[in-house]
Length: 406
Length: 106
Image (cartoon, rainbow over all chains, first blue to last red; front, side, top):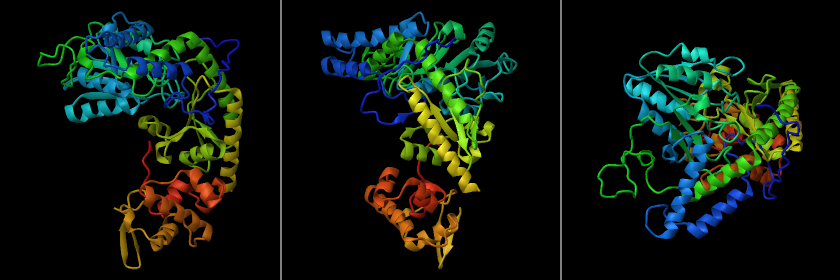
């Protein structure tokens, strides 16, 4: 994706948001006002159980759920909205997917860039079910070579599971090349698009994906408690829960058809409403414009931090392509958590410190033994002035760190 | 399991040196934790202001205070707190105040 010539969005931050919020990879904040307004309106005027009863307002609420399925199906380049499943979040979708797809005797290939939402299910399958899992390393720049994955594929390989972009390093992986190899061999490709959906195009065919698992509360700008997956037609995920729903209540077993097969209980109507408003805001604003804005700020931030003595950046080379606006670093003389506390209390800057739920990344970087790193992740509401203030704040901490160790 | 032994007392610590049973804390324990964990042989009135505020907040609310509240209450800047407790408010001061290890993605 090429960056815009005029990259900055200049969005107005709501007055109640006083901090410099740089933790958008954890959850985007603030949300566009339209998201709050639509959620409020829907819950006040149509806050009934969607699709379960026969009265008209129930159908209105059900239609909102179905329309959001259609919206997301289109976003992901899917063909059947019934294959768009809503879940609590991406972790929930990944758990449903992995335990419903992989079983004893299978072989799975994944990467060391994954979040615990992939690591823990696969580790559990490996340890408890004897599933054979290959954990592929990434290079110094933070990319997994597709060839390193492809060369591990074998006849009993059931699935490749990988993220579209690392939540620690921000590197966007060449999923399409892996997907092509998987499709040639009839192997399922499961892609965790938590960090890219809403920032970059996520299209089933372009990725060669069989299943994409997404969260609603990051770059899709919806509220927490929303997420799901799109499951390509012909791909079958076993039920690992037993139901039920309010659909065809007489049946003793949970329904086998999609989307009911993988959805359980009353939908998060207010959350889905917010997700719908968020996705529409992203579409109106333009993913190119949002990504261009964030990457222009990322470049300024990366260049500023790289110029500070005592700051170590991880996997942050000069490339702006194949990357999202996530930046990870440490400051000499302090643990990451201390830097985070100082950024917060002294400068009003919110960031994420620690292992970022991706322990294998930190083990590979060697930062696991120093309790991780500091992650700054940008969003559409950030500004150049905020980036300047952040660089100044990190410089001040680095100077303090140098004075402590001298 | 690591222990803190002094004056004939033996208190269990977790792997990161936090008291396993926060109720066993008293100011003698604080002095010993300060000496062994933070290399602080002497606790000044400013150290005690921080420790006592954290402890009182923990007893009342079962959690550590916000760092901003700690700075406001003690009239100390964060930099001063780091000078007093080199490991910082969470790993230094809270540990000496007998609080359990904070949860988080670490």
